[in-house]
Image (cartoon, rainbow, N blue to C red; front, side, top):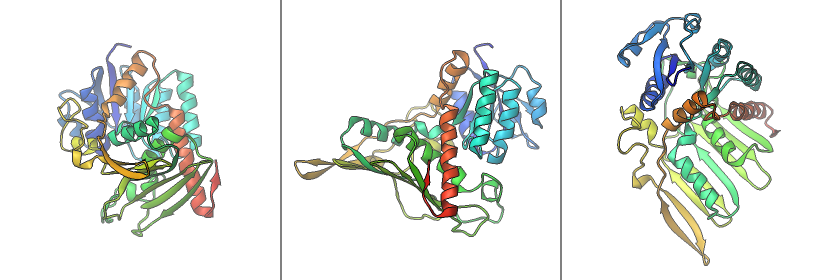
Length: 347
């Protein structure tokens, strides 16, 4: 394979247009040559030269394609990734990785057998606020961490024209849409929990779940992950408490908004959060709680593709190990089981 990674994208919705395409354009070494669109041709607006194909079979016939990025609805991820890996392509799967851990294990196995890179776009590992949170924990200023709460809330009423995420398809709903971000971040910091308890609801009376609270239990730590579609009030993105203080952070990472506005990672100010959104560190100094604003580190989603290129060209580790993405799906499965039984589920 040449040093240029010839890349194909399956699906051309918001995920492809707003995230993957601008990131790929900002990282040297990737060339998008092919896009699979069932009926539209709008990928032609983003590339001078592009091959539009209408089905996966035609895409996989092209031996010049090295990498396939899958950005289709969640229930299609497994079958499409399996076919691409079987055809000898490296594969990026949008989160969630799959619908079940059994599917995840099958993809990991075929990737290993074919010697291909398989990874998952868990882009929020490169959020600035998440990187700041990790740094605070590593520095130990809060002492022993006792409690962590992570929230990802929106206010969106149901619309008449349903999108697939609001339908009754497998893998639709907020649990598979937003929980992979929160779960992945928690597992990266704290590892697998001992047990899971979850409450999953349909607050808008739609066909897909739109609110959840997932509790992860560790020996000396409790993690709470929450998301809802009818949250109109400002809620903290992170609350981290230890036996020496706490860190509270409002506001989401700026990169998604920057991408939506047409900004790219090569521009000045990329990933830089306004000072007004910086989190507050509360620490105990001689019995007095002191407050200190903590500058949020700058994140960079483009690092995912920088690491992916190294994995493909120079045989380095992928940016997201598929085994770690499988663990995210394992927690989602236990959350569904817990919600049905109304009991905590051991891992």
